[in-house]
Image 1 (spheres, one colour):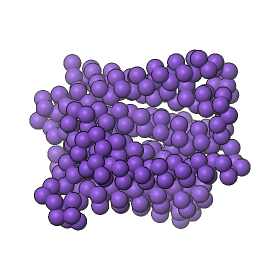
Image 2 (cartoon, helix red, strand yellow; image 1 turned 60 degrees about the vertical axis):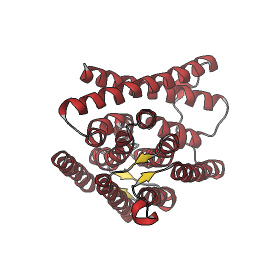
Image 3 (cartoon, one colour; image 1 turned 135 degrees about the vertical axis):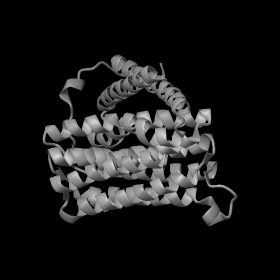
Image 4 (cartoon, helix red, strand yellow; image 1 turned 180 degrees about the vertical axis):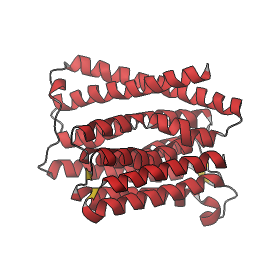
Length: 317
């Protein structure tokens, strides 16, 4: 029954995120919000809504291991799995602004998360944890990132492509879609956390392992599907913006809110995954910055690295 509920939860999460993105995008267009803001906020953050639902729900329930493992696992999957597959389908062209600003900010966010988690090493505490103060710091960085996005959208003359199919959606229907989407995200997140926790207990698996594998891949499906569709349409450059934006949202907003709700104890085993996340983020940045593109060979290497990482995580338990 737990497996059925897990699948149902994932389906509700993904569909809820899809409906929320469509509804909120339509509202933004009706209100004449710049399309660049829609793409870099609603779309990128909408695909990260499942991660937010799972981690925040886990924080409320005291499942701290799953809260942080979900974010770390999702970010690793996004860079290795999502970008790797997209690059294999169609080499990813990377915008100069992404290389100069957004990618370095993503590297900074991963390093800050690691430093804030090392309370024993840097502050002499008896245990490592993301505290409420750490959550406020992450949310402050998220506010700075949002300010940058808004400023860039206002000053930029480039416009992202608008989906003409959504233009005629009435405001009332758009609001209803947004509300239903949020409800779906919350309900789906509840199902995923409860069923994944039951599976972990049944099989003697740790919440950390479940969060890094089953839950992280499941909650990253919206990013995966969105990026694959973009690649097939020859718009693979959109994929890297979506992934970088989603990863920043996961660290700064999701873990910021989660740790503000409840202190998240960070076990020593998680630091290995955090270090891997930092290395992967820097490596992907190097790939992107070298020739302003990620080619098929690099994409294949990223996918192989993810397979090796999953093997390591499962063997490690």
